[in-house]
Length: 353
Image 1 (cartoon, helix red, strand yellow):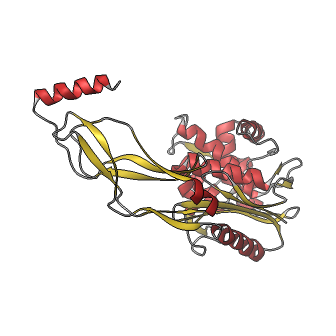
Image 2 (cartoon, helix red, strand yellow; image 1 turned 135 degrees about the horizontal axis):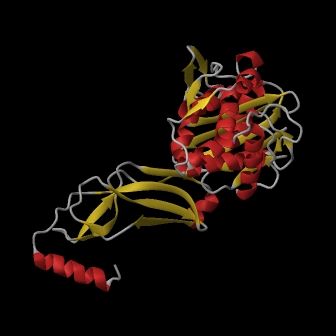
């Protein structure tokens, strides 16, 4: 058996069993496929509306004729990038993964080489990818530790694309399929991520859940059945969360600081929390925790009440473990007084603004 539990924000490993040993990669490697898709989206090289063709190769090896996990895309059809992402994430569609690989990398082999190269750039020395699907291939290898790290990268860097993992079902070609991740709707706070199975490595799963602002990632492999992997992942997540205790940082409406205002009727505005700020901290973290208010200022009037201005950060031993937004308590109109503006400008310059 293989397993790891990791804190998403800090990357700290809370539990591991054979997590650094090589395993034959299955569909869980599609988290790397997704990274290779969403990075070009972030940099504007592709758009969610871009269309990719389902080639005969993608259809035969990953579509209905393959009898493998598929989104049932039709041969020769053009499918929007966003729908292919859903096909990969919700259906584990091999046709979608191959179409993305061919559309972005030119060939699946070239795309797989790019997957390995990018993994090295992300600091992962062991994972080697031979395809975009996770289907059995000689040398297609990874570790539980590196799968957790790839998942953490998606969660922390691309939260706008991580949300696809929580989609419960997706319909394509008039065929509705349920998300295969068994923790969705069952384990409190669970919102992903990916299951996998091949004969050589057994049943595996990447899962993630967030409770009171704290997110954990679990990866298990080598399980004997679907039931075993679901139960073990749930057990490990719950065990991980029990290492922490809920700590109230601020209550809803609390003033956490104030921000200097330039050109306003008031020289500053209070910053408040809209909701209770709760997070989970271990005993060790509680002993070293510090709270910081971070915003870019001075603010320029006029300012509306309820505007998100900055964040409250909770750090332990210098590591960020939690963050939450803060908002302006009231509106600050711009001043009509040229004297106030002149004074503000002088102060602004004196303070190095």
